[in-house]
Length: 190
View (tube, rainbow, N blue to C red):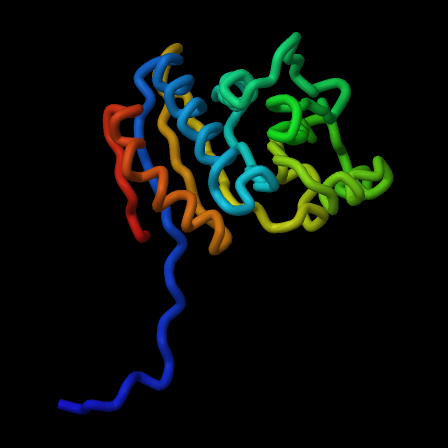
């Protein structure tokens, strides 16, 4: 048996949480916990979260619940036609910007650059991105990728992959309560 440390270590696999939301109330419970976490975690208010899934998977529903839980008031519109909807969460010294993007209508990743979104992504605020594949190669790396799959009218299969060290720390923090907001779940290092 050797007492020497290995010369090459395998890279750490990204953290992944998988679960099932039985209905919209489970989505809302998750969004509430996420909003609380993002407001408290180091760098959470500047997180980049990609939302993936087919039409009707529940991406915009998740964002609406997240925005409400973060303290956004007033009408919350889908950015499908406007491409981006800016929001302000909280008030006073605790206020923070949230940007909700929907790149569904983009036909060329260059449209992202032409729209001037580089400045928004360089600035502060939470960035929530639907259809990020439409601007492939333009976006900075996400902290989280949340993939939603509609199983029926109510149930959603959810997979959250942490893609940055900060995202991994946040997923570790959330994993302590996420099983309570879903029927199944846990942190899996696959």
